[in-house]
Amino acid sequence: MERGAFGVLCALIFGYVVLRAVHVPLTHDEAVSYFQYVLTGAFQPGYAHWDAGNHLLSTALGHLSFLAFGSAPLALRLFSVLGFLLYALYVWRFGLQIDQMLIRWALWAALLLTPFVLDFFSLFRGYGLALAFGMMGLYHLLRFANKNTTPHLLWALLGWSLAGFSSLTLLLLWIQALGLIACSAVFRRGSFFGKSARIGLTLGLGGPPLAYAIWYGNGLASRSMLYYGSDQGLFKGTLSSLSRLLLGSEAMLVLWVVVAILAASLITAAIATSSPRTPNERWSPIGVLGALLVGELAGRTFLGAFWNVPYPIDRTAAHLVPLCLLLTAMALDWASVRRPVLRYLAIPFLTLPIRTVAGVNVDRTTLWPEEALDKRLIRAVEDRQAKTTRPLLISAWNQLPEPWLYARANGHPTLPPLMVNGFPIENADLLLLDTIHSKTPSGFRTVCSTSDGVLHMLERKETLGLVLLADTLVNMPRTDAAFFRLWELPGGQASGKPVLVELDLRMTTYGQGPMISLVSDSQGADGRRILYDGIELNRVYKEWSNDSIRVARYFHPTSPPDWAVVYLWMINGRSMEGLCRVRTYIITNPPEARS
Image (cartoon, rainbow, N blue to C red; front, side, top):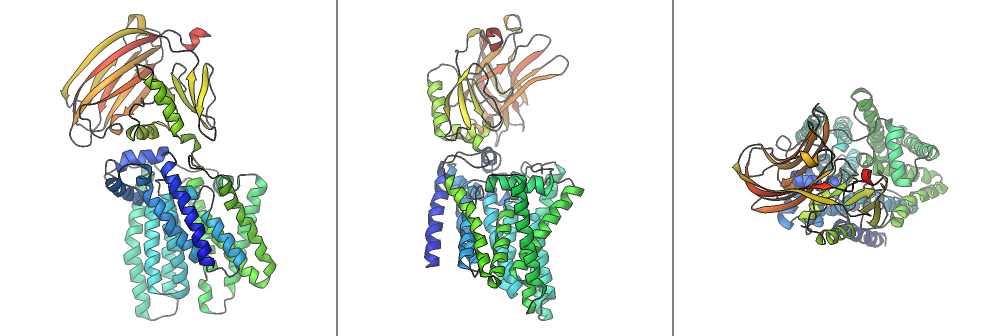
């Protein structure tokens, strides 16, 4: 009966996960991972760009899925989606360790429908896989500690290795897991040969992957790439962020209630393991869970205090959620054997699935609602672009260009590239603006927004007034030069006036994997940076073969000896040739002129 009910629940949730993987627009981090690692095939540390966003296992599997199925969202997210099935399997197995049915089902519901955590199984990031393999490694670690059998040892080593390569946020737990396995092998009763074999397996199979992950983490740290987190500590940083996402509140009362629950769970774990009836009870699941949580929190405090490593928040702290839920459920189960009425304290677990069900959607993420470039916004831009002969000037904040270019490459080729520098540009035709970080400037009206009202597309109330100043054709013979200038600010009429530059570029590149940017650059005579904005053209086309793009770039009023240019920058020494038509316009009705 329970197996069937659990299966139906998992099937419904899995269907929801699949729908979200198909329909939720790619976020900034997903799009960057696609362009930077999947599309190029260069994701191995030492050969690829160093960044904490390269979740090694997720990126490698995403590349394989891309080769097999293409670049559709579901193809990129496929292994995260499948990871939910593995996660659900181990949620089931953990639940079977709980004697009280009420607590068992409350735990199952809370783990399967955790707010914001469930999102990761529909995203092309490593966090979902890390949770799935982490649950696998944790389950077999607890079983090995209790049963001392080799199969559980091997599955634990595999689970923790795959979890660590999915996300380095589990590195501390991974280190502790190997330490506990080694201690269990040493101090448990058994023959010298048996102990030696288990220690050999731990070091031989678990040591090299861990050493590689530590090397990779140190490489990221030495390049200042471990940048995400908080300097506010475990309480105001980690706990506050998780409480806001899970419970909808980060009020002090709520935080202290959570602290009290975890403290009571740890005390219960200590009592449960302090006077074991058999030697095996010293390695009981509740005791091991308590030790792992204490070790994780102590390790984070040490790293934060002495190495200035940011404390984990939201996505980098997601692994703490199932760990704390499991510990609390096992503590309640242990206490309920002695006082059955205590099982009703598991009812608050249902707060988590209730919040998830209340927020059901297939068009945005909990963490990044402001990056949801849904189809309505894209269609609205396409409709407006179709009504004009020049590329629209669209101003957006700096997290949107990559998802925008991904949408352009996947069925929306008429979308003009965004401009992020100087956001919001009051002389833009359109603004993409979110209500979390920005305020609406005067002179614009909202014409479209996402279902949650976070991301808006705004249109100028007054059509941009333009006077054509110059129309030139720039021929670019084949060259392997790093820089090729396409435009520079003319003197005379353009001096001191806002300028819009329209570029119609057709180009061919030679050599594998060109890295090329279209750069808009403006500086003062004193070296002061006025504007710098680049479009990574290798994210428009991986390799250009007589391909074209139309772009609008904006320059603030500039007068000599200050200067402004647009140029191509071939970063990695490949060759290029092409033709570019450049039109220079003076904007005749800027906001400052109308005020």
